[in-house]
Amino acid sequence: MDNHTCDAHMPGYELRPPIGARSLPCVLPADHWDDHRNAAGTTWANLSEETCDAAVPEDLAAGLSGDAAEGCLLPVGHARWTPHNNAYVSWPARSKRVPRTELILALMDSLSVDDLALLRPFLRLAEMARPDAPDAELLAVALASLDGMFGALD
Image 1 (cartoon, rainbow, N blue to C red):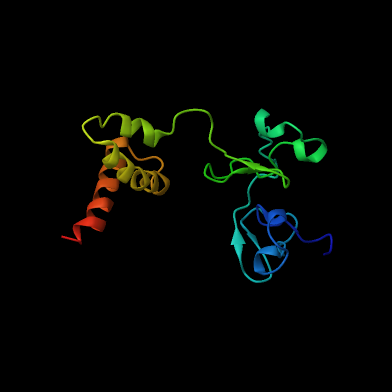
Image 2 (cartoon, rainbow, N blue to C red):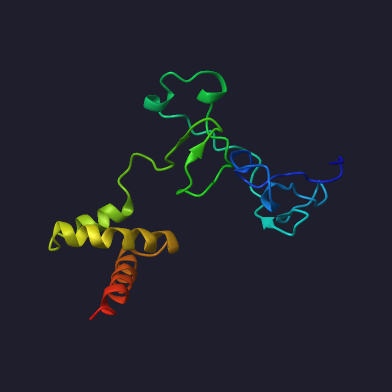
């Protein structure tokens, strides 16, 4: 590519096979400020050039050296359900804190273990779809999804 184009690749480019539209670099001018676009017309957010740099967890870092022990190479602000990755190893992006869905389920002490296990994935999907929604709304969405799936069996 020439020096007049952006040439940025989609986040995680180095983790995928180098074929297809997602492997093409941005063709917009080097100084553009809006979303990136490749020659196939695929667009992606113009994220920070800074990397997340989250450290490899100690238990995973044992035995690693050099580049394999470096921090996360994904852009700052990558999705929280996207694992950290340094092109050699990947590790969960979640912190050690208890997930919000588990805190909501802990308040539902009237449900059996089986009921909680059935509700858990629906609650996780609701949180992914609406990360800023209040707990009560997430629970309502999860219960409605569950009822929609199994209510049709009646």
